[in-house]
Picture 1 (cartoon, one colour):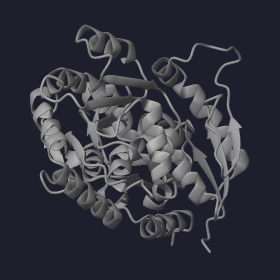
Picture 2: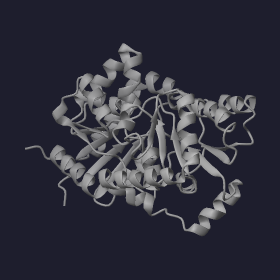
Picture 3: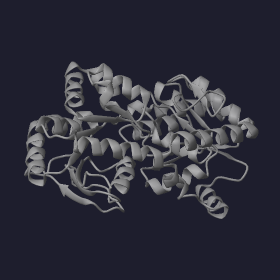
Picture 4: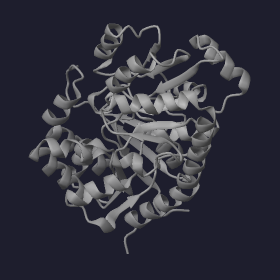
Length: 379
């Protein structure tokens, strides 16, 4: 048994990553969650959740404004709660939000989970963000990342390399447990209006600028001129949803694209299983959980050639790569897979073998458990 008994988990509690970690943590530890999100996602593990108000008034939810305008106040509230709870360890998420609050609260021991944009994107946009992210990283007792590109970014921001641990945040068994039978797959495709001889291409990324979903829509306008037995499933929502739909309308693509809106992870996993090709047009990523989910279901991936994807995909071996924003190159990759069923199957199978080998949560979780124990019981 670990010597760390009680831990606090600080997060927005709105991500599948939270679900993965909390389902694992609550099997062994007493967990108290602290969040400023007044409507967190419910988790089957059912840890104790403390929802903290940063204002006596109900204010509009504008994340950037609240994060920066309320930083000192949130840090004070976190410090007061941690002093009262006295956990063996605090796990904080995101170097520019909960990680920053905990750093300012000066609580130890602290394990910081880096999420991606907090070290890969925002620090490049402003010296202030760079300084704050570096401060959070230096104050943390240890840092968890999920990719080499995040590891390098943390070191560049001033973190000591010997306190960073890299573990893919993914459990292939969790995905496999949601496997559908053939009858259910056929039913879902019928509900979507996809015939047996049509190829279904899926995108599961949020509709935000960093994911550049418009690149896929521009490619679709070219693909359908060459291939008619294909449809596209664009899942999710975000600040760009309206403009994406308008772009699709201008290109006369609404009969080829199905916009689902935001949907549950359960439904996303179902849609992945009935798809033939997975596409990610992201401009920046660490290890993408949505990519690993597609790989776990043997859906051949076509993804941008960014560093995070290169850690998982070798072009032509277990997936296909294309340059960011290059919709012409994306068109050629998708058309190739539409025309070549053998290639789809081969890439999909090798993608599955890759994720099964590298994302072994039973092994990786033991590394994380040992780290947590060493933090809460320093020699």
